[in-house]
Amino acid sequence: MDSIKEAEKKLAGRKAPEFLKNGMVVGLGSGSTVPYAIERIAELVSQGLQITMVSTSNKTSALAKKCKLEISGIDSIDRIDVTIDGADEVDPNMRGIKGGKGALLFEKIVASISDKNIWIVDSSKLVEKLGKFPLSVEVVPFGLKTVLAEFQRRGFKSEIRVREGEKYLTDSGNYIVDLHLGSIENPEELDVELNMIPGVVENGLFVGYADMVIVGRGKETEITSR
Image 1: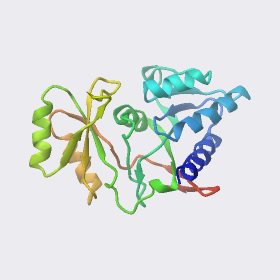
Image 2 (image 1 turned 90 degrees about the vertical axis):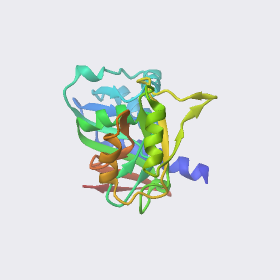
Image 3 (image 1 turned 180 degrees about the vertical axis):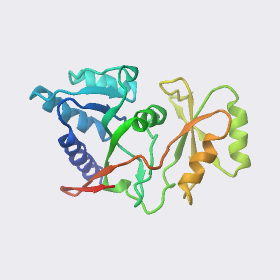
Image 4 (image 1 turned 90 degrees about the horizontal axis):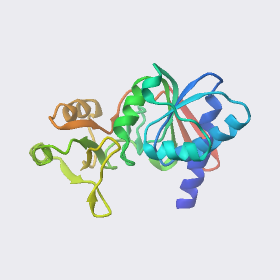
């Protein structure tokens, strides 16, 4: 099953760069499918494609540089033409959950200034309703206990993300709290509700961002666009 999923990721990841053109500013996401897109972009750049790239995480930047791609700082550009990123879940309305890799804040900043957002996923990421995958919430370290208490008051089952025995730190030095919700009835309302809680920086609900979803399914790719 994992090999099938990986093959589907590769199909989707290598398909997305076909939409890139010379002179574009391109955002690179941080999902597990993105390395395949970066690999293909590196091939196209070596063949003459000329683009400017910005990254959503230190890990993505490191991978791009390993592929001999140059990454520009986010503040050096005004707009992004196309951003390619993965997603942890995608529903039929092209709403998604992202943040499994902990880069949701930078991903949302980049997505917000992108003229087109392309999500690349394997078929297992398609769901009828969001919420089975834990919803990541980025929280400042100061007052963490207060934020956790507020989540509990609202009936959210929360868990501080831990890696190698330590609280996971995002690239911006914040914590990730994963909410185990089971299902999300109204993603738009929950998005606003979470971001209104003092101490919450951003959450992993991406509502109204995706313009195209490329799905690897079996040996083919399926494309849905707005």
